[in-house]
Length: 554
Ligand SMILES: Cc1cc2nc3c(=O)[nH]c(=O)nc-3n(C[C@H](O)[C@H](O)[C@H](O)COP(=O)(O)OP(=O)(O)OC[C@H]3O[C@@H](n4cnc5c(N)ncnc54)[C@H](O)[C@@H]3O)c2cc1C
Ligand code: SF4
Image (cartoon, rainbow, N blue to C red; front, side):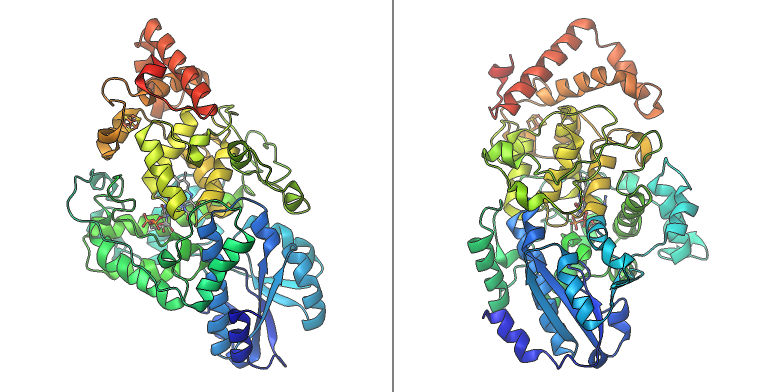
């Protein structure tokens, strides 16, 4: 008997005469849904820990610890409040765990899961009436608002949707007009960070016995999973979640806007809040963070910048995922679907197989669109093998240490490089899915397939987010530590031109890349041939796990 089980048994009220809810691992809140409204003494909740789910992909250890520690603490918090808790630890899909319980306790109610994977796993129980689905109350907008704002059919644009939800919600609005006279202050929020102001240190949390036990479980039973485990950086209780949000509000928000796009080796997070893992578990509620940000004392450009991320982008990507059934339904043609979850290149990097038997028998591995036809493997550099590119190696190191990095590093270093190298967008998505603490299908797929790799064309962004060394050099301090010179011989710039040349036919006609394609035409045959040679050489060496240097590319 573990410490957690003892503690739960001690606190758990009698289970008789209760209405039972199934609470998925990412709905850990009693401030939304039936759990908010019903008397604790009359309700019971079922929570499930499934080693089958953990084994489906080589998830970062910190992510596994985050989910398990929060779910266990949530169980204890609810029992303390008088809610009866049935806590199952199983090695099967959720539907197999829940079917006998529904037979014993009567139909279970559940807020609709955010994850398509879980919806798909539980669909048979929903069809048979063993699970009754009620709306998920964690979202801040409805499908109707999405269609009214962004349009009935793609292409969809975030800005139009965002303006609509700002108007409807009244957030940062005054007499029907946006506060400050504009809906977006994005153009003011693009400063590089040059060492000042000092970025805040993220809070540390003293792990209690429950969290330590989760850590031991991961080391002993899930030790094959990659990534560092650092329990002290892990918010696990309701108080920890509030402490993280207090820190974000008091220490990050003021400078959030101007340095939103900056990157630095000296601070992995700069002024980013690191709340996405907790928002996606509903330990912090999107409504609370948006309302408190709007009312905070920070400069308007920072407050608006942050509100746009949560009320705008986060809601937008969720709707796009829902509308396209996880990109299985696209306007031109429906893409292939991977039969099983991918491992994001783990097998190729480690030389081992990620238990194929664990991946069978569950939901499929997701859609594999590739607008540009990219299908290459993800280089082992994404798993920590040095590439010689200081920007890539630095961010990858952060990711395997923290299970997190901020938005611009994801977009303009990791996804940028993978896209320039023609990596298969599905493999890249699977890598993000396993490596990041905040990744779930509804959010990682739109961000990587839709935004990071342009795998669904202009469905949700106007153009591919790719760049040469210029952008990275301007927005970061990475180049100072690199063996390449961003102005002279950085191969990422060559990759960029080679990318435009390879995909010119697909990109022609897109007004947002017309200028770049015009410059490409003027680039001259010899330089284009050299771009192509560098691309091929780079891809070959990176795929083989070899480092790059000016001499190896000469
Ligand atoms: C290639 C790529 C992959 C990504 N994968 C994920 C993912 O798996 N899970 C995830 O939650 N976010 C993902 N994002 C979005 C974004 O990078 C993270 O939400 C953010 O970096 C989280 O750190 P933070 O909490 O410090 O965010 P902050 O910069 O402090 O922003 C505040 C909040 O805004 C929300 N947000 C901002 N942008 C987005 C966005 N594009 N999509 C959804 N929410 C957003 C997040 O909830 C975030 O916590 C991805 C972005 C890219 C470019
Ligand atoms: S010089 Fe090029 S490879 Fe090196 S850090 Fe800068 S952008 Fe990255």
